[in-house]
Image 1 (cartoon, rainbow, N blue to C red):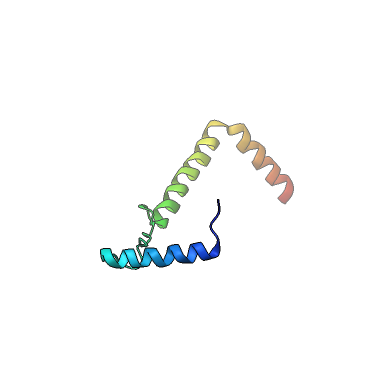
Image 2 (cartoon, rainbow, N blue to C red):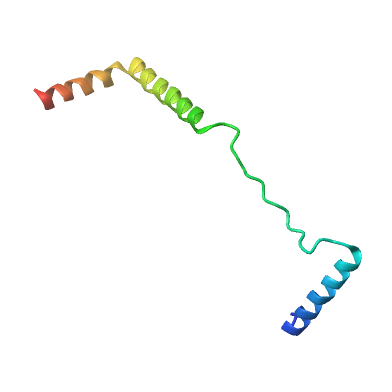
Amino acid sequence: MAQTPQQRRANERFAKTEAAKRGKAPTTVKPKKNGKSPVSASWVVILAFVVCGGLLLELLRIVPELWSTVASMFTRITG
C-alpha cells in the first residue's frame, strides 16, 4: 500500500527526531569520488598511434600488391 503525503511527512518528522536522539548527522550522503583514469590521455594517443601505425606498416609489408595498386591509381589520377 502506498504512503499518502500526510504519512510521508509524519515519517520524515519521526525519522528526524530519532536521528537527533541518536546524534546522527542530518544528512548521510556519501561524497562521490572522482573517477579518474589511471592512464593519461596523452599516453592513450601515443599508444593508438603506435598500434595503428604498426598495423599500417605491417599491412604494407605483407601485401605489396595493394601498395602497387594504390601507387598505380595515384599515378593515373595525377598524371
